[in-house]
Image 1 (cartoon, rainbow, N blue to C red):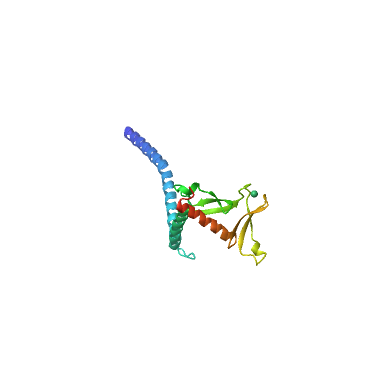
Image 2 (cartoon, rainbow, N blue to C red):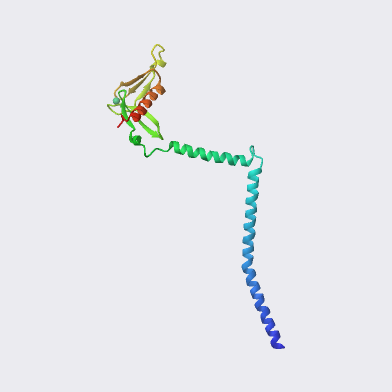
Amino acid sequence: MAEKSHVTIRNGVIASLIAAALISILEPLRNYARSLLSWMWSALVWLYDALLASYALPGWVWLIILFFALIGLLEVYHAVRPESGAEYSEYTEDKMHGAIWRWRWVGNAVSNLWCYCPNCDATLVYINQSILDYRIAPKADFLCENCNSIITTIISGDKDYALGVIEREIERRVRTGEYK
Ligand SMILES: [Zn+2]
């Protein structure tokens, strides 16, 4: 009888120890599961709010706009990315209308186009004399302040027109392969 109760007590103690061990393992797990569940719940609530909340536009419209904005950004990237394979990407300087012209390629478009003095390589200065005197036909003069002389004159328009003339000439030389 005494032996039996001893065993019962021993089993009880072991069972309590196992239970305590299990609880000590399960308790953090349960806390973890609880915080995970509450995080998932807030994520769901946020998603629901984002999709159906009344902004100026509904959330799903914003998602569509975001989608097209991303496509737009990709398009811009492809347009602006220099064509590494393009033969003419090294062609960034040439002599035209008595001046040296330099530019950069942005995609397949000429950018940062400007002219330099063929004698001293100074940056030329644009002068628009027809703005001072209406009797002078429109023309763009490019002056070298170093050499104190007008290096080139492009007739029929202002600076933007002159840059357009040179740009079109660059594109022509690329198209015909003359630049090589
Ligand atoms: Zn000069």
